[in-house]
View 1 (cartoon, rainbow, N blue to C red):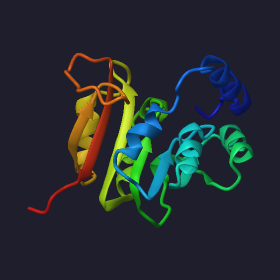
View 2 (cartoon, rainbow, N blue to C red; view 1 turned 90 degrees about the vertical axis):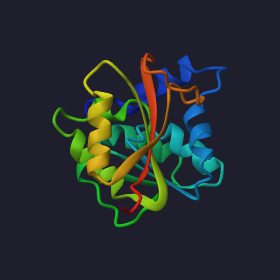
View 3 (cartoon, one colour; view 1 turned 120 degrees about the horizontal axis):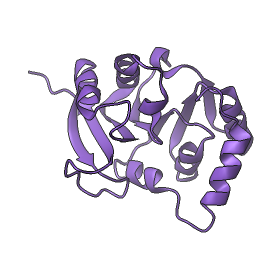
View 4 (spheres, rainbow, N blue to C red; view 1 turned 90 degrees about the horizontal axis):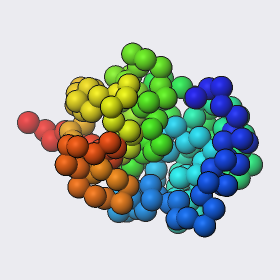
Length: 184
């Protein structure tokens, strides 16, 4: 995603989303009643801005400076961090770490384990990691679950949409919720 133009991306999204409810990811995140959220792979900040509007303390992280420039312009009050997610270490945890918009599909090949580990280290003790991405492409659900498990997170719930439709195994999309592993 590093070669995307943030202004073009946001303009296309705004045009495509005109008149539609576009905050399904934020609605989903709010089910967990977070005080703090890390929007990992925030792009132009669509989810982070909406969560902040709802009173959540949000930090947005993206590797693309053009996307972050748009995010900073749209919401200068939010903490926007330019970083590769696989190497991220903010030195704090969050109630929810969310990867919306196919983030695992946009990370370089061979970095899914590092992505899961970096996100997991930012999940608070009673927090969750939520990731939504299209299936049947570069990332296999079983691999993602294994990397999350290796990073100390267990699958808690899985849905086929951000609206919370139950996952039946045949859906082309998955929203996975992982929690800290219970002590043995």
